[in-house]
Image 1 (tube, protein in one colour):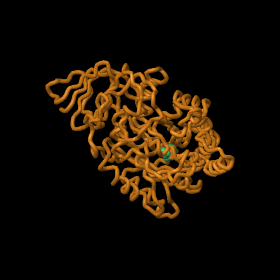
Image 2 (cartoon, helix red, strand yellow):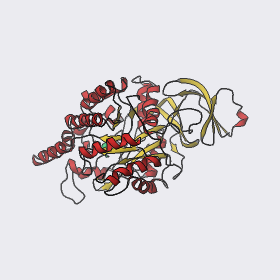
Image 3 (tube, helix red, strand yellow):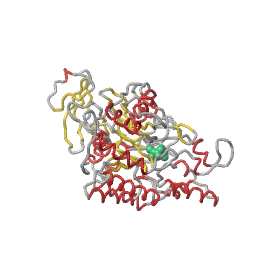
Image 4 (spheres, helix red, strand yellow):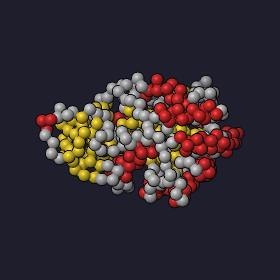
Length: 467
Ligand code: URP
Ligand code: ZN
Ligand code: ZN
């Protein structure tokens, strides 16, 4: 056999126990205590360490064209960074072009990802055009191929109207797919932008104000209601506000299959960041909200109404963030000319696990939010998300005592700053295995460009808030 990880403490979504893990052919071959060491090529002593399933980041934007540029981590840099933060699978987004069949969009994007990805990956399809029956029907082809997840934007120029959203929800339910939604009220957002700019309000603070608690909350409530009407499951991505959290909580109490994702940035930062000198570095959508919303999201984690944590990793370089002051063409910029998004793929698991170490949640809950729930929700629990015989040996060794201060210098992506600069964590991943291959050890990336595979996901069917 290839590898024995011995003496570690295995942490799953429900259990914590001492055992050894045998790895063969990229899979977890056995879990036990009586292995013969001579049967193994490599032996790793994990005494005093936690052994966790690799995290699944359900929300990244690698090489995303946005705001006149492209997010600065391509599929190699982004997955390299993921591996170094204990994330062994990422779900990226492919945006369907007008007139394009859903599966063609996936294949177009996969041509970019496959040669570069260092860990495994899959896709959600951003719905761009369901104006004809043929395009709506093409959703099924993608589901059959192994991509049963779609995303609808209620904002941005490329966002869809409520009618199209509703149509996609209805169809998704029929064909075993899940619809994710970026919920913000587009019309009010656009109107507030015009008003603030006319009043000379150009700083990053006004980005937050134009996408404030109510702008997101109203759209969350509307999205939940559309899902109820369509009797379809719904996944709200990057939930950041109390009104949305309350709507999700109430819908789940009523038995609806409504799920919510939040991101570490909403758990750690509030809207106060937009008052900083470099507040523009924190510009992302939705923006960080007030303390009341942050408390509500933490409560949602405690009471089970947040189902997953993901990153919305979408880094831009500081010179691009500076377009909020001076645009590319040298004319004065404002908050609308800052590309939206921040880096985070390397920080999610370390941040959430450090919160577990600090007693804010259990390690089992951290694993549930970052690994096992995304696996179940997106249809890849036959491969990933747990430490179980037969699953991919995507494993993380975690030292709960290691002190780590996040700096951009210590990160492994291609961007030049991090909003997490200076944040101190107790506990940090010391090794990551992707299908049994060591891809990260003691601060160093050891993986290989192109080693990641597209993971085909199973059809989905949720009848209630079972996760
Ligand atoms: O600010 C963000 N999140 N940019 C990426 C696109 C999105 O809305 O998820
Ligand atoms: Zn979004
Ligand atoms: Zn996003």
